Image (cartoon, rainbow, N blue to C red; front, side, top):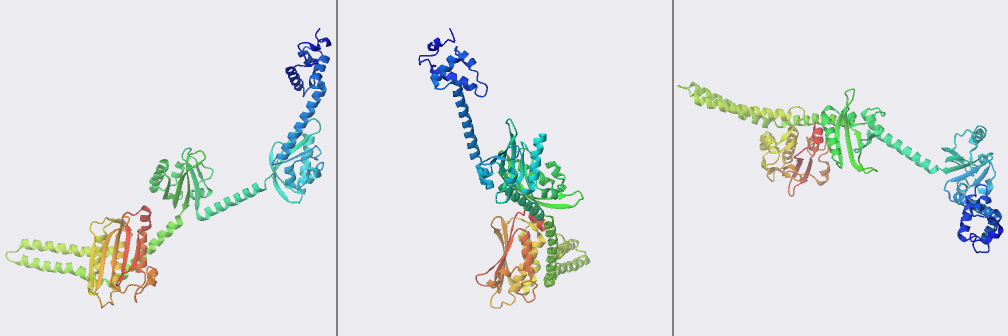
Length: 582
């Protein structure tokens, strides 16, 4: 009969002295373990093996050495020990402070990280009030009130949330912590676990970052320079506060190319389009100067620089800076006006010294006009009148009149007061015109002039009057440098040639007194002169003119006598150079 003790050695139980077969032992243990967290039902398990409770208990004891209840108790004790071991391992290895308290606020656990952070030993704080250990005195009443409110009402403002607060160490020093509190789900009075992290370093980093951002913001405000980013793939444009201030946009308004275009000066819209096209063609970077026209019709000048990079999504992004250069540009324009006035003063000052040359240039065509007029009268008075001869004489008169007119035009252009005009210039022609004005003066000073003007030189872009003023200054200085020379010819060479990197060079070489090596660094300083009656502004103005043409002006001592003054300017003048000239 099933359930009888006589069946203990039946084939079901196996031959091991009435015990269970190995696979049956395993199954029995698994079934009992499945009852570990509930009420053990041996009758149910024994029935699954076709045994009575006593048969199953005896077979199980023979196979395992323990009755089912004792074996289960051992398993439960082992499980508790393993759980405690895992808990201890977690507590000991946790980087954050883990502190548990009971419903009265007394500490029931204090892990090693908490010991290290707060400076207490675990055994010294267990059972003590948490508030008295880690909460600053000024906050203890608030802490106790919150705990009491939760126990009475169940209200939990901080449970399950991360909050920042101030804690206190054993040495009395306070420091910031991040705290998260959870209620332990156990029967009986509530208990709580707190997870705390010392965030002193993070707060220091945040403060340094805040100060850095404040310094950057203030620096951008003072320098009128803002920063921006532009991701082409998403179209996202980010501006710093200063860029918003420059464009005078509300920071709540999303930035788009269309919005930016509403501020760009109508004459510079093509620059914006060019910049957009370059950016969309994946250029390495771009740099532009353009103007803004504000709602009140005032104008701002901007300098924009950007370079390409890749963001974390491997998308093309431009990082750049925008500087408001309005004050600098206005100052440059004012300086240009002053420089123009000074240059005009220098030209007018030269006018008196050129009186003889000017008179000679004008007298020649005037004399021709008078002679031709007298000849024409005689031819018309003849019998019969020589009409054809008179007609030819009138043609010569007209030619000489044009010569006189050209002289006046050149004088007005050189010594007149007008705004700069950027044009294509043949430096050979410009040099010849200046030499023509100075020719009589050079001859009077017994100067032997020799020119070597290379033909076929490309035209340069610039202001003709300014460049002729430089040539005039250099020729007059060379003539003055040879005024006291008596022991050698007063030889003056004027050369033009192609210089490096598509520059055109003009050189004026004299055989005068030259200059001392210690004076080389002062030749182009304002108000420095070696001439008794000189003002010391001619070379300074000349250098300023050549600098504005993106060129250079320099002086070298000759191997024998005298000095050579040269200037070199580029064939092509960039847009910003044209702006400086204006």
